[in-house]
Image (cartoon, rainbow, N blue to C red):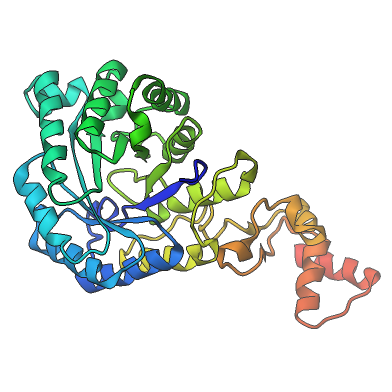
Length: 362
């Protein structure tokens, strides 16, 4: 296995679809899944089968329609959930059951009214049961961001010994800062004796606006799978944004990490998901917002027209976006005005340009 390969786990159709008012039909989910396959994601989390007949059927149909990515189904740590997931994945060429339970004392006490030892055993039992249906079992330690690191390490070691092939360390509530989250991943790398038997996955939420930063910190400390969504959609403030992670790793190629993402398909699937889920992308959204490559300041416009990289670290064409947009505003300079006039077929000498520019400013 390539130690620098970062696997992209897309949960647009599961965590992303949990946004109120953004539910998709099975046919729409299949269309998105096919685009995710073309984009090059490694894993598609297709749904939570036990949660509804619609989710169950979507996992079934996506399993039939998509062949390259692993198809993943979410469960809680109980046999009924796992049975439903296994049944829904019966047509998947490569299926994964994603099971788990809370790891923080907050969840153990107030969600499960239980103890650490009981919760750990339930997690182990769930993984063992899921392994009866597939060799690919992912375990999530919910609210790991607020979990005690020593207990979390015990839990992760136990579920790997039980057969987990991927261990998901979610910052479920978007609580951690990047240095804290990165240190948590490193603690697991250093203190879980069998950690080399599983891939560490990061699943971060954006409640404090640091989901992407936390995911990158996780990668830099040993994680090799990132769980994310198109446009960063998801519960509350959303999930880690797929396009941000992919382009950070591509732009900072000196870090040495690589993904299988075809970046030229990012803008197209961003628009597809936005339209289908009726969730407009904010104008200043990194990578895919309509202003991400727009320039209105005269200084910036002049710099971009002279050499794009003066003010653009990304090439819009790498994302399937038309080249930079020079927008004429009250802050635009002569260079931008001349650019648009020439684009329209006018040839203006310097003297005439000065006169036209003054009229334009007024």
